[in-house]
Length: 337
Image (tube, rainbow, N blue to C red; front, side):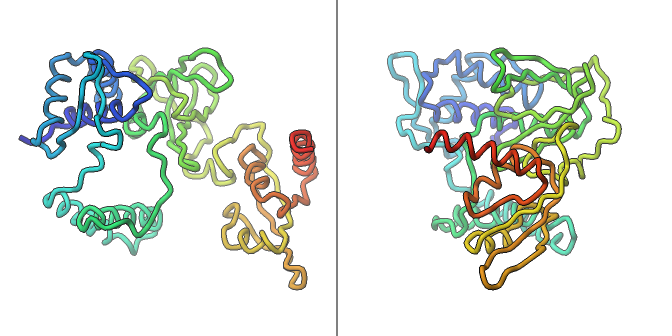
């Protein structure tokens, strides 16, 4: 009997729970986790204990090839006997492999289209992972990833809400807030930056654009009482065009930034531009120094990027950016006198 979508969501949720050994998982906790996941993904919830008990039994069995080493300890808590086990680590079946190969082949047919350049990285990952699963060899390509990020469970439901233009209630707690706040939001865009995901949407109470980290979201649900609203003048395809990272508000200034890179950092900056607008203004063949120019919003991610080069990069203008860097360096000097 094939796996249903809801069963797969429950199995994946149980797997995530049992892999997290920082918690002691009771049956009730697993039921709550599965109910929450089903509500987030499918809009349904409140599953029974019996359902989760059958799921645990099915995962322990060979029906779908899991043979999960689920054990009960202290007569009430569940965990994997093997802390490194996960159902996601299982090799693909021959049928799965053939279907995935066919899908990759179909995607490859689009390689002559301009939009494929944005998909090629994903397709390459799929192709390499298929080869790993088939031949049991080690990966040839190691992509940056972080499977332990909090909030990834919201990616799929948020994607669906955005595509359907569905207003949602977002329960959100920022790092600076002591309590969770609930906002009614028209969601516009999912944005990834350095393996962290963000939701961009408009808050209905004041029309403000918000950028919310998924790892700070405590819950989401559809709001059928409000009408989806398009933000006047907002274009999701160009909103982050002048941004390094994800921080952008009306008060965040756009600037033409000129900076100098020494002989050690110049080759890195030249071959991996800080921003798409980057251009070379000067090149000193004797010293190896180079002066670059970019047009970006002066946000926290911009300064973090500049600081990552240490003493190898110096901002020359505008004056506001120079003063901000001077303040940061002074504060750092206090830490490292």
